[in-house]
Image (cartoon, rainbow, N blue to C red; front, side):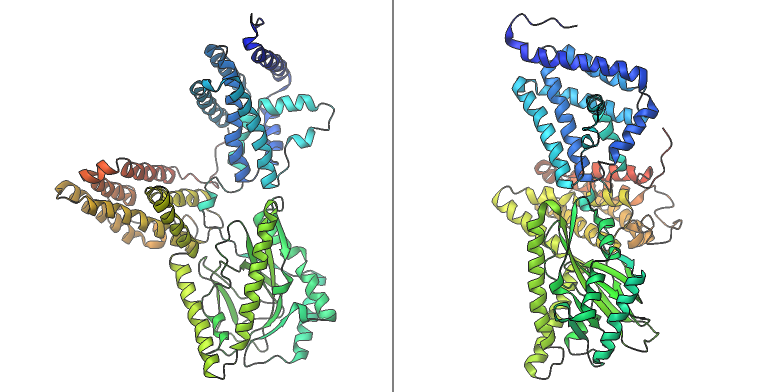
Length: 611
């Protein structure tokens, strides 16, 4: 027990501490009599339902230790020995209850938190209270941002809410440690190229009826066989419009977005002004119909973070001829009779092409659009919706003006449409427009703020891409991943080459290390092939096979080993090493971290042994 302080200096801390110890004593007594591994695992299962998004859990990983650290700082105001004793007692009380992996993580986290509390003792009681308050506020904010309810909201109205709150608080740190293994994606999700092309089938009776209504109406209109024909939603009337509207709002289409993005955090708005009935033309050439047969991106607003406008193509009738392809996945769909595919209007490269089998009639499709955005960013989503609609309206006018180019001006306009489409697609496919904007921003920041911003933000990003993609493994856009990894690795190596040339002097050992290292790495890439080099087998893009060619027949993990030897060659140069002492070591540490990930095959789908 603690005696009240002789002076008022620590009275506030004394009140908080004694309250904590009394509550903890009650909780420990309850744990000994009622709590077990099975009961804790039940608590874990409940907690996980309210903590699924990586952003939410990432904020909890920061805020939960912050709150505990604030409490330990309070204890430090009395005695550092008391802080140590309470920390050890807390971890010890968890040993018989937690699964081994969760206990290990909690122990490590507790040790780090205790060490940080000693380093921040000077914050004092006020700083400690601010830290605890900030912990609570930002945890609530994490749930607001992600749209996930708090676990506390489940039990706060129950008669025994106080006991559950104490239980929740006491086990919060291990619960957060456990949630890391069960969240959607990972903390490195921002660097992972997800496959956001969505598919569903409209096969419910009402949907089949509505598609037939639209099909019959289109055929009665007599569409052209010379070029594509379009009817926009706002021009439709009667039953075709009602059928179109029901399809737009059907659960099959909306469910694609709920499953991919999550209904808790994201809103889905219909963009009626862009919706249309589309009839494909069997002919194309020097007109804007040729755009559809070229790889292209529909819209220019791919730079908008956090939000997307989706185009969904729904096959109204039977189609055997025309195939829709997405080369950055890669994937292809011959959409027929109710098949529906959705893709990002402003980001996804796509095209149509002809199969050998030909259609006997028109290919009729619906183009339906949705804007998907975080609920907390509604104005941002509305802005993207407005800008995309405006662009589509203007592009539609240009498209119609060049669909049958008779004059020289119209033909030049058609050539401009085709040329701009080609150049935009090439930039997006080879480098990524968003990557170029990011690089431009870093260059500007380096010029205005600090010259090393570009260096730090680009030199190591490809390792984050490796680690995040290798860990996630599911629903990866392989072409986009490979493009981004090559792009940022090229920048990183070019940066090293720049500093090497800047400080070059004849150093035989440096040159030998560079030559040997990168010969091994390049030979390994040649033996594997570029796709397998970038996790083609692990991601299911390539068939796994045993490689016995040099250097795999004599060097383990030759690509990483060779790259590390080459990096040591850069570091051996005295001028580079003196100006950038941590650049190469950081490269090597991250390479070895990824090699460890490969050796132990650490990824989210890996089956772990039972605790």
